[in-house]
Image 1: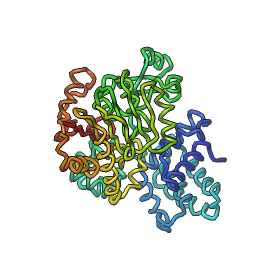
Image 2: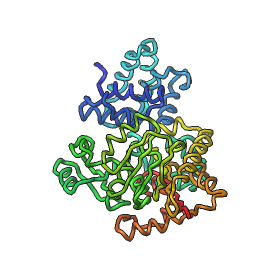
Image 3: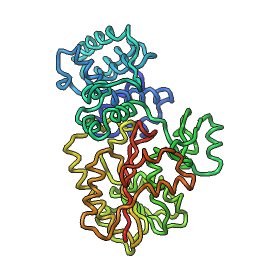
Image 4: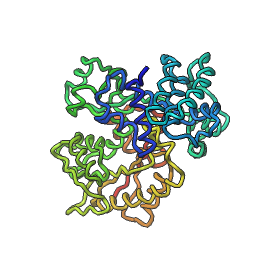
Length: 447
């Protein structure tokens, strides 16, 4: 029995994630795997994302039957074991024998043949334990007595869960962790009057957005395989990300400080067709991608760091959607939780503060600046805003509720519980409480 294309692809992607700090979603949608059949690509995606979501649980089960500590196993061997363990524990339609055999073959394929008998022994023991059991499942009503139990059962680092328990309570942390462990429903934004009907005719089932009237949620079908997606008439974008762009509002001169890959820039261009929009991107290859993904004639892509950007005039609307830890996006990017460390937050904060302070210098009198992250951590959110405003009498912190109410009155915001979206003067979406990624937004106005 040879190794299936799906399992081989999943194995290679998982190795690259570990070795190169790559992201699963980018690798799985790269040209390297475009030739996989739809079924193989779907299985590869299921395996990669499943292993990343449940890594600590898988390692705990592997360690029960391994004479060698998991931390001392060669990465190739451990990756093959994780792939088999995920299939045995979570997938009821994959024969156990196939999962075990193909993972052993992956060990040999990685030129670790001397470890093949070891991998075979570990996996046969694991298969014997789980063969009579039902596949692992999650219950949204499951109770947890502590952060440690929540961390253990729902596969999140303890230090991160403890932070969330302190901030959101045990039940709030449970909602976040539970949401992270499921494939999120894809949200899309459409352009063109006939795009939705075209997708429906193509077998793609859409539902209304739960936060935004202009968003759609994909119930069934492959949007990324449609001609509308290839032509740029449909973009996959989380509803909270779309909301951030809408909160920027309208203006004649708009600056997007950290624009790539361009989802928010695209919304700004659609909402402000007569405006001049400058989209900054630090990295040249990402700037080229941004130009390709957002070809709107009113968008000027500039390959520059906002710290060095010196325009001839200020902007009446500025968006600083800064690089962050991404702890609000773990449902989409589960690899983040295994590579992030508490010390990283301080480093990120310094970069975020520098970007925000530079963005503030670009705001024209009377203009507004939206600061946003996809992080749940206060070091990247409230603390950055507080430091940036310290001693800056020229700026006021606006109450975001007013902007949410404006969107509600316009019929754009359809989420009924505005109170749940507001934390003080800020907007905060929380995975599990809201049907989207976790975003933070602050709006600053220059006097």
